[in-house]
Amino acid sequence: MSRVYNFSAGPACLPVEVLQKAQEQMLDYQGTGMSVMEMSHRSKAYEEIIGAAESNLRKLMNIPENYKVLFLQGGASLQFAMVPMNLLSKHKKAHYVNTGLWSKKAIKEAKRFGEVNVAASSEDQTFSYIPKLSADMFTPDADYVHITTNNTIYGTKFKEIPETNGIPLVTDMSSCILSEEVDVSKYGIIYAGAQKNIGPAGLTIVIIRDDLIGNVAEIPTMLDYKTHADAGSMFNTPPTYAIYIAGLVFEWLLDLGGLGEIQKVNERKAAILYDYLDNSGFYKGTARREDRSLMNVPFVIGDPEMEKKFVAEAAAAGFVNLKGHRTVGGMRASIYNAMPVEGIEKLTAFMEAFKKNNA
Ligand SMILES: *Cc1c(COP(=O)(O)O)cnc(C)c1O
Image (cartoon, rainbow, N blue to C red; front, side, top):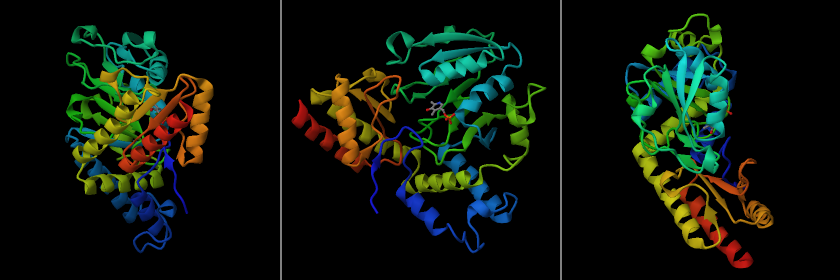
C-alpha cells in the first residue's frame, strides 16, 4: 500500500489515524456485530455516536449554550438558500461581502428571497484580496451580514471578524472550520460543508444562535432550521456514517490538544510554503500577503505549459491534486488539518528540484 500527499481542495485528505480506526471498527462496531453504516440512527449505539460528536465539537470550538449544532445534508450550497429563507424575517434585506466564487453563489441564491446589498467586493482584482470593511457599510435595515471567511479558490481569508453594529453575522467556513481558534459568540450562524476540514462529503454542519431559529413561517419542513433543531438533527435519517467519521476527526483534534494546537501546526505549514514561494524567484503566490489563507495556497509559474508540466510531474512524484481551480489556472495546494508538516517539506523540496531542472 502506498499513500500520496493529497492537496485536493475537497473532498480532501483525512487523518490516517482516523481512517485506521474506521477500518478497525468497520465490521463490528464496539461489539454490535455491524458497521456504523448498517445501524439504525435511532439505536442506542448510534445515539452515543452522534451525541459524542456534538459534545466534542462543542468542546473544540467552545460553542456557547445558546447555540444549536445541526448535522445536515445538501452541502454549503444548500445553506446559500437556507440562510436567506430562515433569516430574512424583518427587513427582507441582507448585506453580503463578495470575496469569490462561493460568495457570488451565495449572493445569487439570496436574491431569490429578498434584497441583497453587496457591501464590498474584491472582484476588481480577481478576488486576490479581502476588501476593507467598516461598520457603517452595514446599515441597520438588514436582517444579517454574510461573509465567506476563507476563500478556497483564491486563497484569501478574513483575519478579523467584521464589526456589524449588532446585525447577526453569518459566515461560510467550509474551508477553514477547525483550522484555528474561533470566537463562536461573534457569529449568528457558522456553516460548513464537511468535505474539506471535517470529514466525508454528505454532511454539512450548521452552528446557529437560538434566537435566529423559527422566525419565518411557510418554509418547507426540511429547509427550516427549527425542524432540525427541535429534532436534534434526527427529523429524518441523518448522514450517519459521515457524522461518525466527523466524530473520529473531532476526537483526533482533541487528542492533539484542540484548535490552539492544530492552529500552530497550520501556521507552521503555511509559513514553510509561503516562505518558499516568496524566495523561490520562480513561483509566485497570487493572494495579497496580508490576506493569505492558512488552508489554500494558490500559486503560478506564469507559463501555462510549464504549469501543466509541473502538475504532471508532481503527480508522478506522489503530490496529487495540485492543479488550480479551472477559473484561475495555475496551481493550488490545499493544506488542511490532515496534511502533515512533512507533506509540505517534501512538496517544497520537489518544487525546488523542479525549478532547478526547468528555470
Ligand atoms: C467547497 C465550498 C463550498 C461548496 O460546498 P458544497 O458542500 O459542495 O456545497 C461553499 N463554500 C466554500 C467556501 C467552499 O470552499
